[in-house]
Length: 342
Image 1 (tube, rainbow, N blue to C red):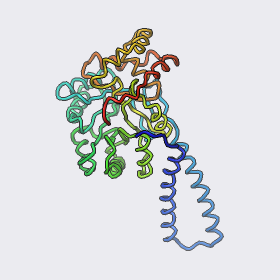
Image 2: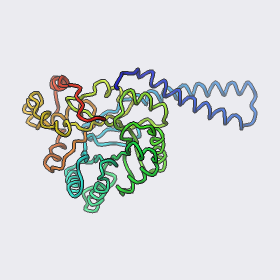
Image 3: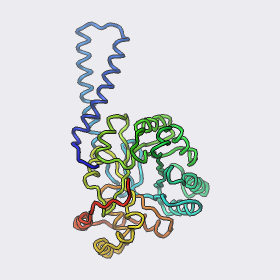
């Protein structure tokens, strides 16, 4: 499913669509204007063509600019213009009071990125935890970054209703990032609906989850907004070394779910001899080594946990760094071993 496609070809496709749209707009405007002398019109068209060429070139350069991680502020600037934390909390398996307590504990420990989804069935708990944390003076709404997602099937078939339902369940004023959870027959329709919610100020940034090279190549020419984020499974046993650079070169930030291997695989990954040895050398945990490895590859991490001690440990990633040799040793662990179906 992941075949490498020329970035130049993809960008050419994207900007061809953009160019066609701009040409059509110019023709429509010309049809309704006062007739211009041929010589003046020729000069004006030449100037417009030169301007368009410069604009397209500038846009291509901007789109292809790789987002840089700021290890001092612990944030990354998205192509949407908003700043997102480089690490956060995944909430896939959290529900009820455990979810509320875990999110509030994370926020108290300085976590500022919370990831959820309609399919997780915990948006109401996430929203309650955020509101309580605001009321208790732990955070301000503008200090945190909340990500949610809508799911294929009926949710993408009726995207406006589904998006509004997410906003209502969270009930935190606006959503910082909304993603399409998987590719779907109605994904372009759903994405365009998210674009409209951005225009209305209800969502700030939009992106995709579980999209790879082939899917992105087909999808991007059909939409107006370049995704700010693509969220995929990434860990030392499944590294996506062909996919990550492709996405980053489009100016899109990559976020990794299952950074510690996922259900049923975490213990094996944390006990890997190479990772354990590196952890011992830095006097940190294996989990911290794996998360730091992701960050140094330019991948945002959202490890999931309901344990306050583990949540706190997963935030302590900025007092050490891995050497190039250590990064390469972890890179060599890649098995192409995916731990979930999507």
